[in-house]
Length: 557
Ligand SMILES: Cc1ncc(C[n+]2csc(CCOP(=O)(O)OP(=O)(O)O)c2C)c(N)n1
Image 1 (tube, rainbow, N blue to C red):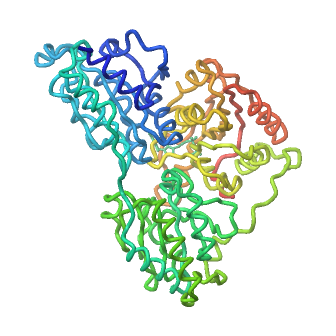
Image 2 (spheres, rainbow, N blue to C red):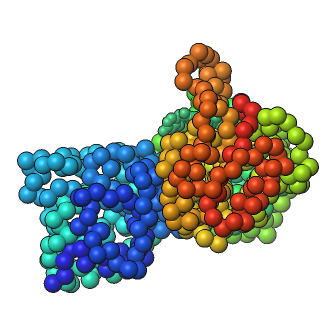
Image 3 (cartoon, rainbow, N blue to C red):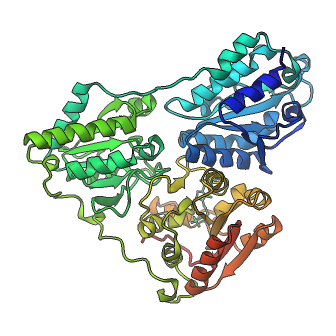
């Protein structure tokens, strides 16, 4: 009979999980030895990097990705990234090596003494198989669990002697390897769809809030069709929880990104009597600005594939269902109402949108300026840097963003309009952007990937530079160097908590650090040079870094 290791290799091959992200130790070597030629191993020099790359890869491929970490300390290093993966609903199968079974009770060196409890709140399922023969089954279960909605990371701890054991039965392994598990959140019943369509039709001024799970579920076109058919003004869910975009940001119906705090968000939605929020938590609030969750005259219905998201929402109705299928069904239902002429005073009969909040209403995106046309400033404002990027940004480009003070400016300037074009850490833990950009680029080799990163954020997963260089992953890193934690200074003003230490970052030369990891790194002194350098970097087909000194402070537009 085959060994557990042989059976596992076949299981992974059968599932298309032949890319392994990790950082190895002695407890993982039995799994990695005689590594199959049709597999590839992507080495991260720190575990948070390996998990972050896998997160980007899993999100961009839409399939579970496999990560292998080194027993307790490796898992510990990866925890911040696992927290982000959970918030991103990223289907990660995370394994870690464990001591020999015979040495675990005496707690020999490197024993993970409570392996399943360690990542517990951050994963959907955490397991150490009770015997070696259960390893393939545990991994199969882990893959299915990670991929079912709501997607998320799972963890399996595997004692190092398990790999050598013989499987219990070939028949058992055959089932584990070949069976499929499909479905998940499903479609609400026809009556619920019809009633939702009627509410959209009868509302005087309905609106759509588009969340990240629209993109993850493949519901982008359906969201556009629904908004167009029902003439819904569309808001993006707050940037804090909007790890992906759910709607094209250059669309005439797009109104802008909601502010992530209770009082202003409730106020911004106040002109709408009915709000349909799709594929988002309700809502990823931060910071704490107390107020009314919703105005008196506003009601809200959420569609989410995540039962917990539905249960914990502080207001409104919620329907747990597949986001893409439900949007498509709603498009049909709204169409039937419009065709029958039964629409009320609202937008579903194709009437013009009225009364959406003026402060968020947007003009059509400005034409993208040639870099030469941007006025020179010294140091340039972060808005200018982002506008310069917009001027050279390829049509099919993808942005992975972790530059906190430039987030609003980037969303405003780039106006991304294709699915799968934007990744951001919904968890808010720094250290996501750089590794995720590598994972996204590995998953989408045909699309240019730009990682826009603050120089502070870059340090949380700085070893990512090595992986990008070693595997020649063609990410363009744009480092915005403002010599401070600008967003924290902004929050200290907003929340009236002045005088905090540790918010300045003088003399941090990220370009030099990147060069040390093998990245071609350049500085750009002015917008013209920045445009030239970005164009060159994007065309090079290599990992590249362009660092630009920008003025301190927030960039809103
Ligand atoms: C793991 C982790 N540690 C600390 C923070 C708190 N934090 C949020 S934003 C930020 C500053 C980021 O600095 P930088 O990338 O230079 O961006 P800027 O604010 O200057 O735009 C920090 C430290 C965090 N979000 N995650």
